[in-house]
Image (cartoon, rainbow, N blue to C red; front, side, top):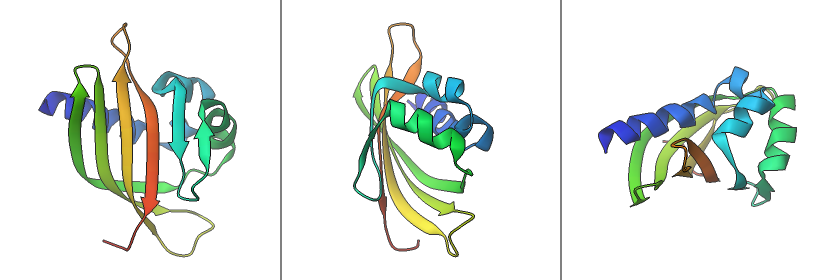
Amino acid sequence: MEDLKQILIGLEQRLFQPDVRSSSSELAQLISDDFIEIGASGLRFGKANVLERLPTEIAPEITASNYELRMFSLDCAQLLYKAKMLKIDHPSPIYSHRCSIWRRSAGGQWQMIYHQGTTCAPF
């Protein structure tokens, strides 16, 4: 299970990278067609919105820690962690508890199907 945890942390951290966030094709590979995100604002987004929005944004600097993996089945896992985000237009860091659910396709590729970030006090 530790190997899978490292794989999913690596995939999650790819989504933090400016070059991946600016690439619709890379995002499309990492995010499932039925993806749902609940943002810190409480708004719900789908894959189409993410593919439209992320490539046009200036990528924030994200530092994550305290990863925890929970298995729902052999092909479905939840990754929980804490994140500190620095945005170019925001004067102070934004802290959040984050949750992503990853599903392995029939072809063996892991894709994110759900993500939620909830702001919290600094840690």
